[in-house]
Image 1 (cartoon, helix red, strand yellow):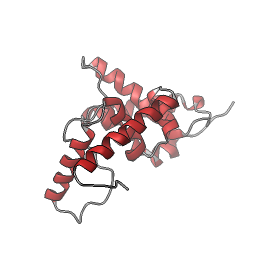
Image 2 (cartoon, helix red, strand yellow):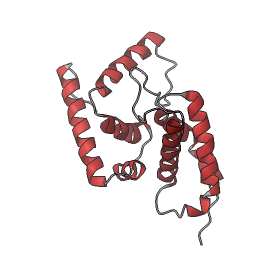
Image 3 (tube, helix red, strand yellow):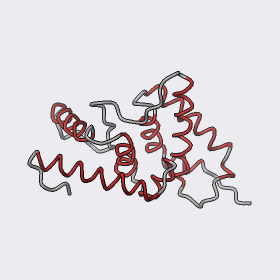
Image 4 (cartoon, helix red, strand yellow):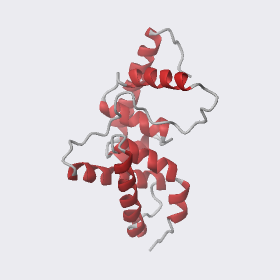
Length: 173
């Protein structure tokens, strides 16, 4: 039987795990801390179930997502794993050289763009672009088929491309 010591992996991926917990908890920081702590406990208790077939981050994100769903249900909230309007999580970049006003304008602009997407499309874009997961890994986290995730991803790219082009931004890359 394969036993792994996941503590170093938890430390390595803590920032991403917290960002995903925050996203899953609808930007509620206090709830995110609780969900992350409970998720870490589950991971430590179940570390012998992590066989290395999937990447650690994929396995961890699935546990965090399920723990968040349980926590949201306990608080008698309708489960939503979408971002709140005008509250996009930081992508952990160094923004010290931008003014606060510029940062707020960017957030509003991208929030408006992301609001063009369906809930599922936003989830996939969050996992792929903010957490660097592949489409296959995103499918595992969201418990969807890889084909479905590819369709949502392709449709989201088309919606965003059209939206940006209408605003005079011809290329996204």
